[in-house]
Length: 234
Image (cartoon, rainbow, N blue to C red; front, side):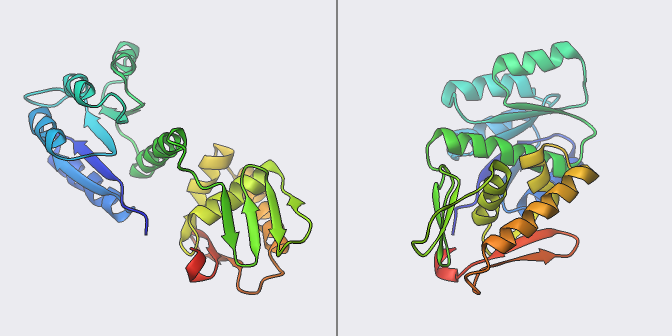
């Protein structure tokens, strides 16, 4: 089982902070919450975090100062700023410090998770740890060549969208792949037309996987899809 990503969350609004921490934990992350920049900095010195989420306006030490100090310890850890400000100068200041993303309040927690996951995928890709070949029952899926092969038969070339969607399904094998997450990851926008397009590609992928009865893509009503494969290959 893949290790849960560890997030440092610094937010001085107690209610918002607790809601964000609970939501992140429900989405499969470990999240530590601190109410000010000083406490966040001390925590970062003791714990290895995969990503940081900082409110800009905090007591004792603001988010920008905290980020600058953390950059002296770890220049690569991704940082997302949360702020009630929408002034261009504030946003530019955040990116100059080295922010990976910037979200203006109010925002949806779902959007924050999408942005966190997008950043972590980019970081994972830079480290060269992405899976390039998946075993799907009797099939072999090569994400780089965009080919699907059933037990040594002639490789079938997939379109870019088919390959991207199958890649997401494989990365979440035997787990729910949320519709909105897939849409925003591949199509950028989760509008009606893109949603219908994704349904068409799901149908196409189902037809390409019919040779192995152990493999199927099922609908999870109101949530998304699940790629079912033999447990030993998950």
